[in-house]
Length: 584
Image 1 (tube, helix red, strand yellow):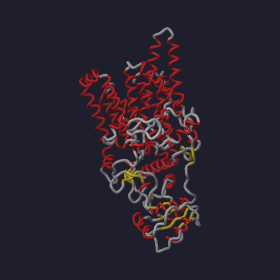
Image 2 (cartoon, rainbow, N blue to C red; image 1 turned 90 degrees about the vertical axis):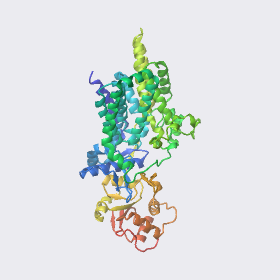
Image 3 (cartoon, one colour; image 1 turned 180 degrees about the horizontal axis):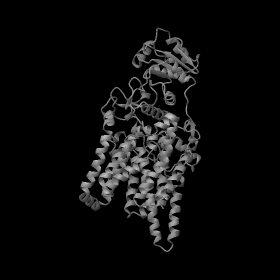
Image 4 (spheres, rainbow, N blue to C red; image 1 turned 135 degrees about the vertical axis):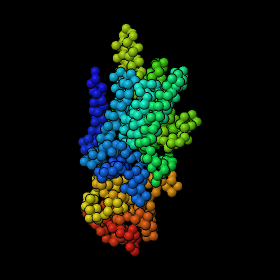
C-alpha cells in the first residue's frame, strides 16, 4: 500500500521527537548536554548565515565576525552552510538554538528515512527496510554525534549518494539523470559536512571494489558494455558538482586563510575494540559499570561511536555466513567489515586489547591526499549503515527460504524476532539537555550605548565559548576577537585551533574573569602590543564593578564608559591604553 512507507517515516519522526523531547520543551533555550563548546559554535554559525541572508546576500566564506582581525575561513570550519541557509527563517524568528533543535531531530528521522527508501529501491521488503533504517538513523554512532557534532549527525545524504553511484555503475535508471542527481547530492553534502562527504566517497569506493573483487566476470562485462554510460553519469555528476562548488573550494584551498593539515591529533581518533560491546549511559540497556567505562573513553564523548553490542554482531556474522551466496548480503557484509576496520585507525591502541598497527588497513591509506585529515573513528556512521543494510537483506533472505518450507510463517516470524532482539540493545534514552547560556543582563543595552559601527572589533572577556553564544543569541557585536574552538591557520599555514593561538592579554583577562588568575599579569608593553594587533573599539565583559577583572581594566583604561546591568564596557578609540599602573 502506498501509505505504508509514509507510516514508517512517521514512526521515525515520532522516534526522533521522543529522543529529543527535552529540547522541544524549550527549543530555543535548551541544548544537548555534554558539549557546550561545539553547541555554541554551531549556534554562532547559524546566526552568521541568517544575518547575512537578512541583509540580502549569501554568507561570506571568510569572515571577521570571529577571530578579528584575522577572521576565519568558513570552508575550513564546520559551518553547515546549507542547513544554515535552509533554516535561516527559523533562526531569525526563534533563534539559532531552535534551528539546531530542528536540525538534530531531522538528522535522526531523516537519516533513517533516507536509508529506508534506498533499501526499498534495492528490493528490501517494507518491514526489513524499516528495521534497517531505524538501525542507521538511531544508531549509537548517530546518538553520540548528536552531542554537538551536527555536521556528522545529519547523515541524510550519504545513503542517497551511495545509491546514486551504484545505480550509475549497475545501469539502474538513466545515467545522465542519475548523474545530475548525484552532482546535486554531492554539492549539498559538501555544504553540510565535508568530512562526511569524504567518508561517504571512501565507503562508495569500498563497495565498488568489493563488487569488482567478488564478481569479477560481471564487473568486466559491466564495464565493457556500460563504460560509456558510466562515464557519462559520473562525468555529469563531477561537472555539476564542480560548477556549484568551484568558488567555495577555491576559497578554501587557494583563498585567504587557506590551511593545510589538521589541528587535531588525527591518529588518536579511532575506535577501541571494547567500544563495540560496551554500552554507554546514553543507551536504554546498560550497566553502571559499562557506563563508567564509556564515560572514561580516551576521546571526547561525541567520539564514542563504535558500539553495536554482542547480539547484533553475532547475528550479523551468522547472517553473513548463512547467506553468503546472496550478492547483497555479501556486499554489505564485506563493506561493513572493511569500514569497521578503518575505524580502528592506524596505530596500536593505548587501551584495551592490543594488536599490531601493521594489520590495520587505514595505516596504508592515511597518507593519501585528503584522507590524512580524516578522523578514522567516524567511519562508524557509514559502517552502521552497511550493517543496517546487511540486516535488512539477510532478514528478507531468511523469510524467503522459510516460505519454501512447511513451517514457513513460523520460521519467518522467528527470523524477525531474532533480528528485532539483536537491535534492542541499541535503543537510546532521551538525550539529556541543559540550558543555553543566555547573554548577560544589559548586554544589548551596553552595545546600544556604545554606539559602535557594525564591523567594529570588540574584545569580549571571556574570549572563549561564552561570547559565541551571547553574539548568536543577540546579534551583537558584529566582530569580536577570539570566540571559541574554531580552526585557523598558524604562521606556517598549518591548521590549528584558536585555543593554541590566544594572546597573553586575552588569556590573562579571562583567568581574572574566572576568578582564578594564572601566571603573571601582562606588562603594559605586552598589552599595547596585543591591542595594536587587535585594534578593538571596545573591551566588554560581564563582571561586578569591584571584581578583580574590573579593577584591572579600570587601572589600565580608566572607569568603564558604559555600565548596563551586569555588563561593563571600555571604549578603546586608539587601540592602546593610556599610561597606567597594573592593578591586579
